Length: 182
Image (cartoon, rainbow, N blue to C red):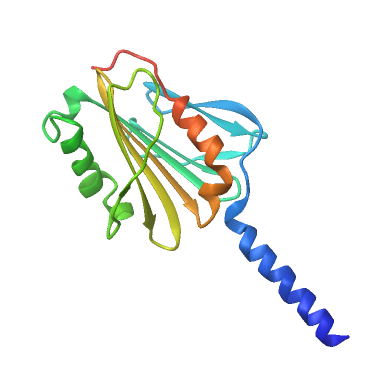
């Protein structure tokens, strides 16, 4: 009897641990804005506490984490006029982001090419998957519009990306440029 109980407990613990990263995002789309309201994105929300907006030191970054701490999305919008000192094209913008803005996330990570659909207002893009510190999976999408450069960074607990891929890719497509950017 003790062996059966022990086996059942082990099986339950394995199931619980294996499912931690796999919790699925669900609910109706809710719109989130960066501080200066230059862009918006829609994320599935099952209520007011579905997402936590992490205070960013900069108005051009939206940083949100789901209630289960499975998915973190960080989106940066940098106007081309502000980017000019550090980036003159999408490649130099990507390098700057990986080496400066999100250096702690990309430290030691290498991107493997990924094919990602982007919104119609985007004129150029590149994307890559990576494994981040502490067994986190990542997808980085670098985009260029007529006015701005965007970084759409998705970090998930191991297994979280596969469980939420459809919702995450829909959120990328929901990205909207809202205001005239200087």
